[in-house]
Length: 407
Image (cartoon, rainbow, N blue to C red; front, side, top):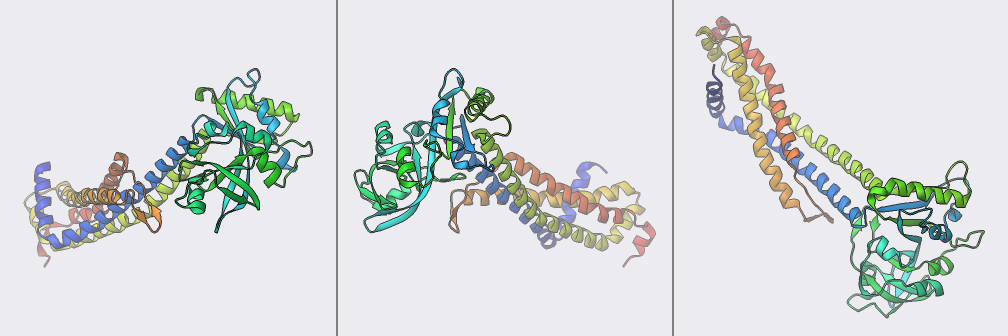
């Protein structure tokens, strides 16, 4: 039989029982729609996280103390950070911003909250791509004098001061009075934490007035050193330069007492995690596709039973084994493809409806890619082919005489 004849016969056969065909289609439609919508949610979350991290800067390197048997609090110091700004030993380094973090209770009038206090230097603003919406950032003078000045994240400012302008107001951090000198622009929650729920203070103030950790040498211990690289193409050279400077300063001959990670590595790690999560969601949704495939197989088995005499007549008139097989396989594949197309449309519509909407306190971001739709259609067609082969082979193997006798 010609392909067009097979297709026309398949359409006529499927149209003969519209309700049964519709129910068989429904399983594939739901399965494909579930795969597309769940994977689009996973893909959207991946893109959001990547963009949030990239907004902090892609040419960043983070140096942190390594957890060894020694006191990790003294593994990195302000002197280490200053040593990295050396055009001779570290020419690839553009800027350095050390930080010290402590958790504390904040009180302003009758309002109070807990937040992360981050001790920083003025370079932190440009290195970590922060922007001040009102007031000013931490200054060199405030660092030198250990001034009790604070720059609030937008969430902290709203919690403590509401609609009032926080700049110039006073607040208490661990019972010490601080003056608000600035408010940061909203950054939102990221994979690295809620950047709006933090307070920036001079690093010397955080260390000497809010932190209980001390070094044996009397220098300021830091929890991380943020390093900005001149050129992202020189990332490997910069990491090697940083490691060399710190090894010389710490007189290391064996195992490093620090770790160096780049922003790119962080993005790659989180991307891999999100891809695994998206595939996991897609696999769970794909179970419904298998259920739909079993439904197609069931429908095709019933169809073979009902059309046994028809098969016998066609074989008696000269139809070959191949013709009968192709006929029923084409019906099953057409059924799954039709359901796949409808499922793609439904999945895309659901993804668009969920995009940017808050559901159960969570804002969903979706991203529908062509690869997702092609994959869903391919899997739907493969399932129809796979589950349609057995009924088709059973129909093709019927003996014409036995088929004609079937009642």
